[in-house]
Amino acid sequence: MTDSRSTPFLLFLLLLPVLLMAQPAEKIDWHYEIDLLGRELARKHCNLFYQTDSTIFFSALDHVANRTSEQSLFDISVQLQQIIASMGDAHTRINYHFNIDAGTILPLDCYWFEDGIYILRVRIEYHEILGKKLTGINGFPLERIIDSLATLIVNDNPYLFKSQFPRMITWTPLLDHFGFGGQNGYELEYEDEQGSLERVLVKLPEEDGKVVNVQPEKLPLGWQDKKSYFRDCYFQEDQIYYIQYNKCWSREAEETHGSGASALFMPSFKEFEKQVFQTIKKQKIDKLVFDMRFNGGGNSAQGTKFIKKLIKSRFNGAGDFYVIVGRQTFSSAIINTVDFMKNSEAVIVGEGTGGRPNHYGEVKRFVLPESKLVVNYSTKYFTLLEEDLPSISPDIETPIHFEQFIKGTDPAMEAIRNHLFLQN
Image (tube, rainbow, N blue to C red):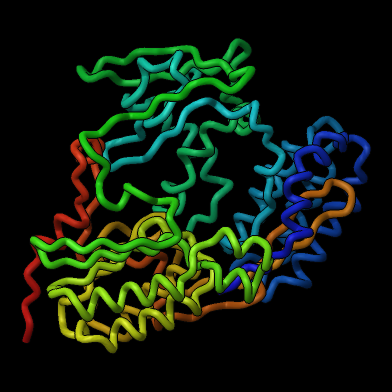
């Protein structure tokens, strides 16, 4: 699945925060703007009303249009996103987060582990909350905040929201919109090692400062290089060949579908593929692992061709292939997961995927003329499986707990090392 990309559009996105800040909401003809949004989505989307009646959709838009006089551009964009999310297509959305200035983001990063949401990165002045379990903000329990922010995400499955919520709670305009803000800052409630609740007031940083990260004994394997497009590692002792595929994109994909200039700074998948098959030829390999748990998509064709070659190699035996998926497995990465499912006896390991197998995609965009809001919409429906499942569920579930993360344990890889495939 290919996202349309272009240098002019990327330049537009860089300038977008300036354009948005210079565009007062009260000067926008919102009745015209919101009417145009509805008409364009209905016209351009391949099947916008597949689960929600058009009357409900346009009535909801009219309700927002009639209440814009006392609201900011951001508040209006959030309400529009709630309506679009209710339509059920995770690829179709208002990019309301483009309205969020970097100076309004709380200086912390979190992750939703199996046993809760933990703080993994923070400004050094708040180092005491590093590695702590977050339980509330400004006196509001996290469960209540979750319920409100969930209205902005398509309710396909819990894994999609789990992947996005930790970032969303750092966006203070979003917290303010739903009534969770504070006049003096944002008081975080957290749980210490003894289970006692503590609080700390976190203020928005006025300038860049030093940040500190949780320091595990070592990072779990899948977490060690999430920013790489793709990488590989051979484990001699276990005779496991590990391939991590984080992006369905590459230098070659960018040359074909994007900007030639940007391609110069991207890794070559052709060279990586050559390296992989040299390793397969030279090394004794009992298990081949293909990790897509952090892959949010791109162009599926690259992975599909590669997977077909892998399956035709000497690993096309039952139990030899293991595919790791997770909450961030989405879009084209879903297609590539199904490539393994349909053409091999690969064992799926990890947690449920954020994306659903049968889904709308092939995304295009348009920009509303006055508000400059960017709207994504789907142009194609992908039917990958006969049964319309909300997520791809793994054969072996391996959720990760915070303590495992700290110790450097990768539950997915541990399960694969210990798994004995019973052949017929």
